Length: 386
Image (cartoon, rainbow, N blue to C red; front, side, top):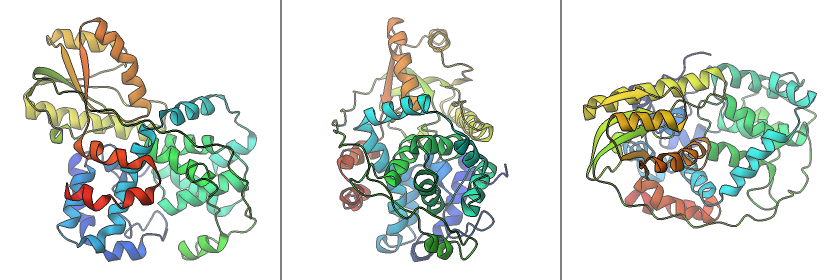
């Protein structure tokens, strides 16, 4: 895999600085074109850094608005906020994640599935995107939509396996954004609305690189009813005094967390999720390591990268540092949240509390994700102002 992205905060900030001048009308007018992996000057390429919060949504938007009027940068800001919206939507409907996990564990992998993953379907654009994804860990957002549509409606493959294929290979593979975007294409997010890829649209927005034929011309109705939303839980009170800080790949800028009266005496990191492409796991692992060193230096604390996810290792680390409280950035619904949920009762049995710290940005934004994005979009100016 080519080294397009470097797993460090310095690299994320440098990429942000390079993009900011292009975040206004220029981005809005050119963002839908997929010119191929050799030319990404029309988009930001910030998503792997934002996904792991190596750089945060707030600082990205703040820097953009320091150079552009909101009306000029609105399209880019909306793209940043889509990830926030998806997290909030899934946070209120965690059952969707649980069902999806069951599906990818039980659905059979057919010969057609393996051909699609290998880029051997005979559909030139689809096959090129499958190869590009595996080689670079990235796809243009428009290509992701086309790919998902072809996977579901032309190849007749389960959307769940396509979402899992993306999550396995995308450097910016966010559980909420990835899963729910696939559901949107399949027609499950917006009742009765599917996304059907059109050959002329692909020809136009790839500047003639692909001129595909033999696409599905219709999409069957979705088979899922409405999913009830559960209100976002209130933040627990922040602890005070000596605490340990636990990093996960969900949030790698804990320096910007509101730590209140906490005093960090030790820092640890859970290992990156391993059941993904090697390059994806390596990116997350190296980003965790860089954040671990950065925060240990700032807090003058000892640091350690956990080699396993088991509670015994975490308890031993906490006891070695005489910790009764471990603070961690709130992990939204997904694999890390599932991991932490398993650790909580074991830690509690050892008289150690695991306290999640949710960012004010999430607490303010997520409740507005109860419905569709257009309702959420109207709240963005207020969120930025707050």
